[in-house]
Length: 596
Image (tube, rainbow, N blue to C red; front, side, top):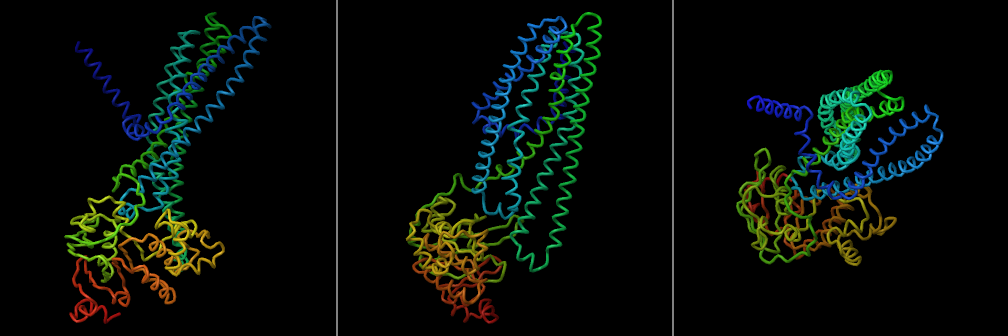
């Protein structure tokens, strides 16, 4: 009994070591999370399974065909040969149809799952908190949506199916070989574990290298995004050579990893090929020996040599397919690293018509801390009555933009609360909360598309009449009508075809169309020339009417008409009051005003 227990324990330990050697435990988690996407198309996978079994049957038929044809030729059975040729022609047609539909269905499932995963990944990204996008480069995120999603093909398509097909093919071939010559079959099957050993030896290394390679490709994409997004800055500072060298360095790192992958896969495929050749020559030599002894016919030897490849190939082929699966799972891991990030909302945002603000905005002990522990906003208590215009001034880094982003719901407070009409941000429906807000940033952002679509972002279902009225109020209608296609003019990336003032007026038109009761202006005129600034200021004056306004600005001339001015310093309100009151106090604001 003790011997049996020791043997069982040894077998269990050997199984655990084999799982670690082949990397089963590491691949289990990413693969299991793909199962719901695969199960969604289980009917198609069921058809693929049927075609797979049919293909295995064809393999066995081919070996039988070779054996029967060889024996018939030696025996001079012409009628049998003719019958076999007719049967073979029919099988060829069936094999053609089977291969065609298997290829089409396989591509269909792969493409559908990739589409579903892309949509899931993008929907999840759109629900992530703003700070996630500040901490991760957009180029790397795009890489996960493109290269990594494309790279999962092996885990849902060819490699996965072949890892199912090959053991079944090996088992069926072995059973047929046993029927032909069982001693020879048992000897040849000993080559199988050697092929598995090769797969385990190189498969995990392929996966680890592919994981590093995908990360490096993400960095390459990030650098390219920086180059093309900041092209004018690059030109102005003659940074072409430096960035070109960085790109060359990144690409050399990619090349090094690709070479390593090629070597690993080369060893894997070469080892697999060596085993296949060994099996062929070994079975041929040993089979010829059995023929000489009269224990095997010539036809059976042909069938055996043909079929031995299908018994050994799955073992050697599994090694190659295992390596391909490991490459794909490295991409799956990078995708799930994003999907594991906790979103700040459960569902996708929807448009909600703006409500009215009756009482005002209240901030209670508001605090916001960076990930490194430093406070950007520290203990702000403030009430802003509905209809007031409040200006926020202070030195760079004082927390002006952070405060506006907190009010817009783009950042979540570390402590304290924000309330609109006594409804706390933390408890409110995010869609309702954001419906209170129109936000005009310092750097106007326009999406690739028509001018009409960009303005309509403020109210997706707005009729054309309202879009035009919003553009008129923003002093944008006249220049829009001078463009080749008016409101249907397609603007380039980030609105690069338009001037800064034109882009800003379109963003103001977007805010006017939304007609929200709270307006947040983040230094909306700081980077404009005098002519553009005058047009934008006129548009902003219309936008600010009958609204609660919070504006941050470096130019103090833009804030002197505010009902109240807040002077921020190191995230705290150091002074507040009207323009005249703050000048009389002769504090930080007064000194800043004197230096303007």
